[in-house]
Length: 98
Image (cartoon, rainbow, N blue to C red; front, side, top):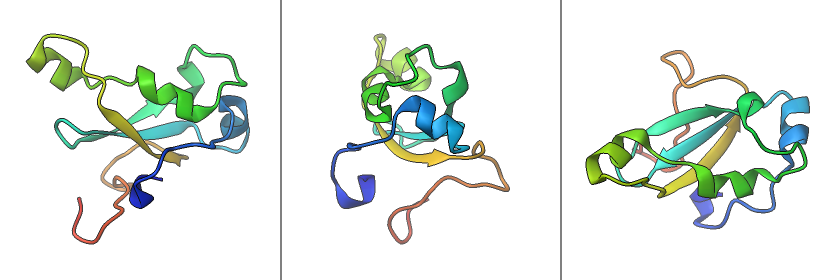
């Protein structure tokens, strides 16, 4: 939904995403423009929690250290079946973005 500049809702429940094979959530920090993956199977939330509600709990560790308080400006980008790596790069939404 970030490509359309809209909210990440409606989204599937956490349990539904895990059952479908999407074990990771790609998150983009708006402070430092890094993409990170979050494992959904270790998230301590009920399985009926919609994924878009997890967005408010995401914090960038690097930006939080730099500003001295929890930095919460991040957006959900995509549900993923695997982690970000050299073989599986981060999602790009616009031409030239990386």
